[in-house]
Every structure is written in structure tokens, then in C-alpha cells.
Length: 171
Ligand SMILES: [Zn+2]
Image 1 (cartoon, rainbow, N blue to C red):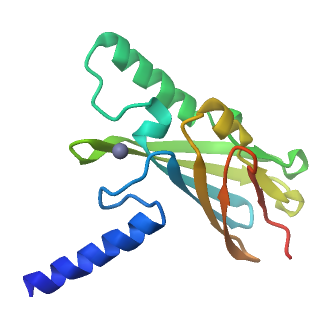
Image 2 (cartoon, helix red, strand yellow; image 1 turned 90 degrees about the vertical axis):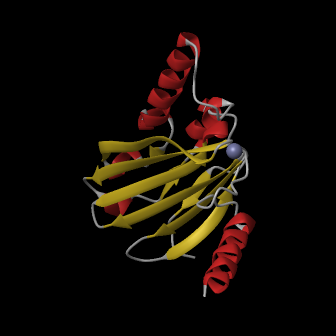
């Protein structure tokens, strides 16, 4: 019984590893997961990343200087206006940002999760989301595995600094 469970959890960990995902401590530096759920006027963005991409390291900050640096980088990660852009006509405004304090998945690997919630006045004008700001503010992000569910479609795309746009228009 125990052995079967172990095999199941191992195979789950492996499939997460292949997708660059990190739930079981097998995350890949440079890679992050970005999920988007959009229904009517509400949009939720969820970013799940190795701390490495945000901070350049994953140990707990020790000196005051390190603590200050971590606080600044986390504040920048919550400053959504600098990271994501929406079609202006859609009138999307940030309503809230929630983040988990960096948490260790293994003694040497730490992850950060941030959720952004937007409300859009005129969602019919929303054609996509540009993540260019995130790549500019945080060069540690190399690959952003985006997946989205909207009222009209469900899709996925791997973004990088040269290809930062999530296109919601139907194909
Ligand atoms: Zn790591």
C-alpha cells in the first residue's frame, strides 16, 4: 500500500517536473507557471514561481540588507501595473493582490505564489494580456507557462521575453 502511494507520488512529481511545475520540490529555475481565469468582468491571474526567478537566490534572507532586498522584490512582484497590461478600452482595474510568503518546498528550494484579481468595466474589449513588464522587471523569468480559461476558450502557451502576449481572440 505504502509502496503504491510512493509510486503514484513519484509519477506525479515526474509529470510536474516535465511541465516545469514545482509542487513537489522539483521546480526548474527560470520557469514559472501562470494561470488565468476570466469570466465576465472578473479576471484572476495566478503566478507560481521559484523564488530564484524573483530574487536570484532561494535561501532565507539573513542580513538586513538581504531582508530589505527581498521586501523590495516582493513589493515589485505585487505591483501588477508594472507587470501586466490589458487593452485600455476594457477598463480593467486591479482589485486585490494576495501572496503567500515565500515557502520552502525543499531545504534548498523556495517558491512564491501571487494572485492578482482584476475587474474589467468593458470586458468585451479585452483581446489579450501582455506580460512584457514581468520579463523586464524580473529577468530571472525565462519561460512562463501560461494557461487560461475564459468563457469562450481554454488554451495554453509558453511565453518568453520575446513572445510575451497572451491572445484571447478566438482562432
Ligand atoms: Zn530552486
